[in-house]
Length: 80
Image (cartoon, rainbow, N blue to C red; front, side, top):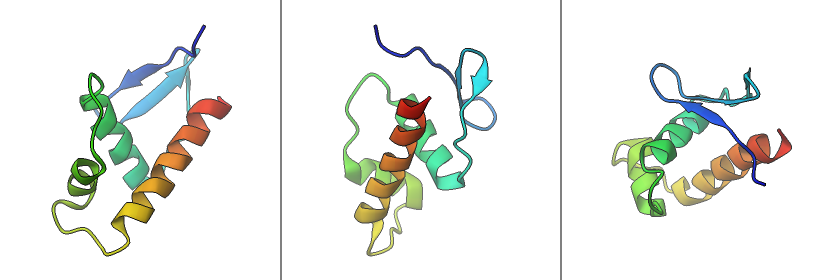
């Protein structure tokens, strides 16, 4: 059986497991989480996430930075 999380997107994005908030505190990582939750029914292309995180003005390192954000969010979810 997979992990069960409660996700909140009204107010600051948050993920709870067994009633406890998981520690996703970096603003861009919370923004990434919100973008993914809003599009939970489909795969989200990296370009769409980059546009959402940097409002269409991404830095040259956006793709690498996005991958690092994803890695950190996954680590919090899988270590929970």
